[in-house]
Image (cartoon, rainbow, N blue to C red; front, side, top):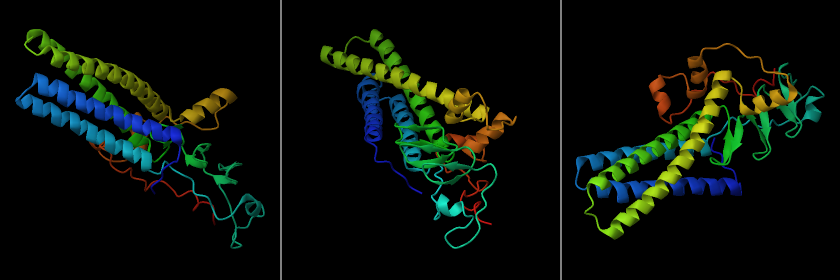
Length: 276
């Protein structure tokens, strides 16, 4: 299911992300590769590698933006019918014992689902609402969100390394025209500042994401448990590789690097559990 939020802050963050990445691509290709590796095979290699990372970044970001994060669909009944033990067709309703009631959606929801005030829906294993993808980070799109963070971090490190090498090569070759050197230095400084800012930002978020995966506790659950000093979610000592597989899919770990679809056959549709 394709979803998209009409949130002004989300629109701005998406445009800012694309603008920053495209500007980085422009600086690397025009002011670093073409200036430092003119007519060299290494220049072509760097252009292909850099743009491959950008392509994967855009794909993973688009999938995080437009993918269903794990929305709990609204049932046909409401709680006034559910409290009577009947649905709209007169059938019985029997939610599981570990299900809770969302007072905003007025419906039953599965365990570890939380209501997002921006999306105005309950999300399975909701971690947080991220304006950079204009969507919630939940059970079904967390993989794409983490991949987006990793590609941005990798792109930032790559850009800083290219700038550092270009400055080193410039010290050995001072034959460039003054205007060209000044323009390249200006764009290089801006690229380094952008790369450091976004790089440190996404690395910090990625660390939080992996911490949430390895502790099997989302950010919402961490805040809730810290405030109540009580954990309603029973933790299990699962192997880390199994916890990662629950997010990235039960495929070969090498495929976790690519924005492929997550295998959801082990997930049960939340509404199907309501009826007996």
